[in-house]
Image (cartoon, rainbow, N blue to C red):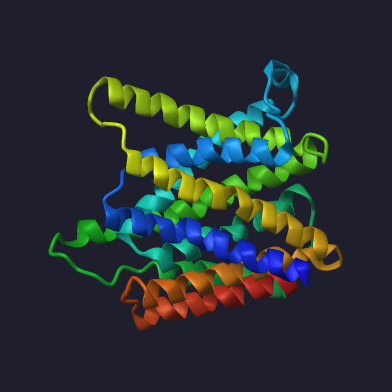
Amino acid sequence: MSSLLFLIASIILTAWLTISFKIIERLGINNLQAIVFNYTVCVITGSVVNGSFPVNASLVQQPWFSWALVMGACFISMFNLAAFTVQKIGVAAATVAYKLSMVIPFVFSLYLYNEAATGLKIAGVVLALLAVWFTTRPHRHDGKGKRLSWVLWAMPLLLFVGSGLLDTMIKYVEQAFINPGNQDAYLITAFCVAAGIGLIILSFLFITRRQQLSGRAMVAGICIGVPNYFSIWCLLGALKGYAGNSSAVIPINNMGIVLFTAIVAWLVFKEKLSAINWLGIVLSLGAIALIAYG
C-alpha cells in the first residue's frame, strides 16, 4: 500500500512542476527567478532530508564530477525551456514532450547496452514520435503567419530531444559511476550547479538593473523546489517498493503524469485541445505501454 502511495505522490508532485509554470505565468511572476530559487530550495531540502550537505572540494576528484556539472547546466536549461513551452503551447503538450522523451534513452540503450528490441517496443517508438507530432501541433492562429507556427512546433520538439538526451546521460552516469554511497552527493552537486549558474545570471541582471529581486518569485521557488525534490524521493520509494517489477514503474508513472496534467489543463486552465491533440495524448499512453511491456 505504501508503494502505491509513493507512486501516486510522485505522479501528482511531478505533474505539479509542469502545472506550476502556468500558474506563474498567470500571476505574472518572473520565470527565471522562480526556477533559480527552486534549485536553491532543492539543495537545502536535499541536505535537510539527508542530514548533511555532501558537497565539498574533494568531490572534484570524483569521476562523476564533470558529468554533474553538465547535468546541472542541462537541468536549468531544460527547466526554463519547459516553462516557456508550457506558457506558449500548453500544459498537456509540454508534458507529452517531456514524458515521451523516454524514447531517446531507450534507443541509445539498444546501442550502448545491447538491449533487445522487440517488435512491440519498436512500434512504441514509432507511436511515440507520432504522439509528439499530434499533441504538440499548434491549433491557434494569431495572425503572425506561418513563421510563428514553426516556432510553436520547435519548442516542444526541442524539449523532447533535450529531455531525452538528458535522461540518456543520467542513465549512463548512473550505470558507470553511481552507487548508493555517492548518489546523494551526485544529485545535490548537480542541483548546486544548476542553482549556481542561475544565481550568476541573476546577479548580472540585478547589477545591470535589468531585473529586480522579486519576493513572489522566491515564494514560487519554494513552492516548486520542495515538490521537485520530493517527486524524485517518492519515485525512488515506489521503485524500491516494486523492486520485482521496477521496469514498469517509470512508464506507469509517465502515463499517470500525462493523463493527470491533460485533465488539469482541460478542467482548470480551460486549454482548448483539438481532436488531433487528444489523439496524440491517447497515442502517447499507447506508446509508453508498448515500450514498457513489449
